[in-house]
Length: 236
Length: 231
Ligand SMILES: Nc1ncnc2c1ncn2[C@@H]1O[C@H](COP(=O)(O)OP(=O)(O)OP(=O)(O)O)[C@@H](O)[C@H]1O
Ligand SMILES: [Mg+2]
Image (cartoon, rainbow over all chains, first blue to last red; front, side, top):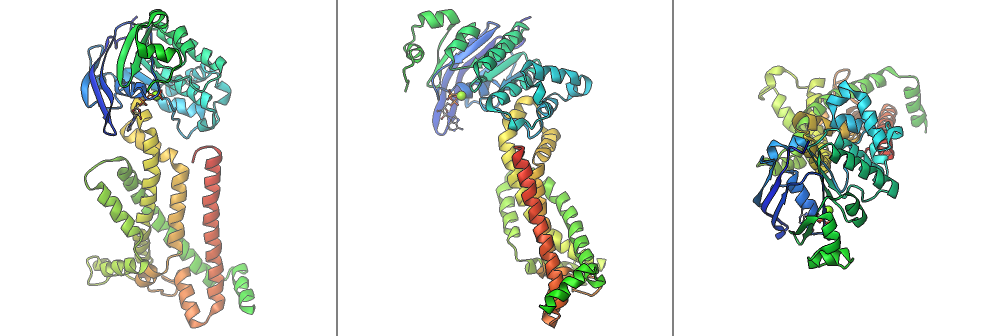
């Protein structure tokens, strides 16, 4: 069952921040289900693009539609994991029950399963903000998955995780995608992009400069900025 | 030294006059605190998370009120409650109720201003996440209040500390009437001027102990919250 929020259409998206166009005319159509990985240098505008997609930032110009609907009409079908996870000043388990009060009432066992899936079951009653950075990211992914979103946005969700956690999260994301959730994931990790991506979107200086199937991107990218990025050269 | 010894004797033997005064002080300040908290938490939360024209001005006004000298507050409440004043018909002047009103006027701006700070910071931090999770309106407000519980507790304690230690306003609207509106601070002022240092000192000691207790609680709450990353 493909995601109800496809195709994702971004047309001529402009965003001005601090007197500067941080997104300068983004055009992007994502039609394929599966996992799209957004790559690009620091400050390219990846996080802002994700926030626009999630409806957290109103663009100065341009339009976004998801499955031919406006963002406001389908926000509930989306979930996002932020680059810096924000957790409530409560226990690990309470963070989940706050995000999904319905489930907490009818099927509290499900919340424990969700914690088990990210290897945090034994920390259920600990204050959530006392978790380490990687554990916090795992918890916020578990929280995002509770709503069974049709679109899952991940902003460097595995950035501070150890290799085992990265693989654990990747398998969760892959499983979610297999259930029909469209996943858009920002990552600097080329290994991760190779493992997960069906499609790569390369962002540079506030614009999408390349969109191609993953294998093609890594083997035959023609874009000079993308080539330089993959070769580890600093882009300015 | 005799005075000091005698003062401690009054405290240790639970002297009746002393405890009448102490009890009234605590009662007045606690009631004022309850009223003030029910006003300032909703007001502070509203001002912290709602954008409207004039919001900055409201906050400015609150900060100005916060710095208002207590005697001026006393004078204003006095004029309000005096027989020819707009609320004169209530006959509240020189009653504990008048003192409660003065203390409410004094500490509400303080607690509100502190609460605004706390909730505003939390709102900044949580906004995107709540937006993402579809948490809005009452649920968001309730979550802010719950998650700010420790910080708000210290704001409330600060308000109580201010209320119980206050003299100027309370003496004007309460009148420092024996057995009726005499509280610790006004009694200390009076007994000192009369030269009755024993009672003044024993009340002073109790007041000091109370203030130490409040501050210890503030520190304790902060420490507990900090340790669990709940601050
Ligand atoms: N509120 C803001 N005000 C001014 N400039 C901003 C603001 N938010 C972001 N920017 C700028 O927009 C640009 C893009 O930011 P963004 O966070 O999208 O980068 P990114 O591609 O996610 O980078 P990274 O890989 O480091 O996470 C940056 O240069 C940043 O300085
Ligand atoms: Mg980013």
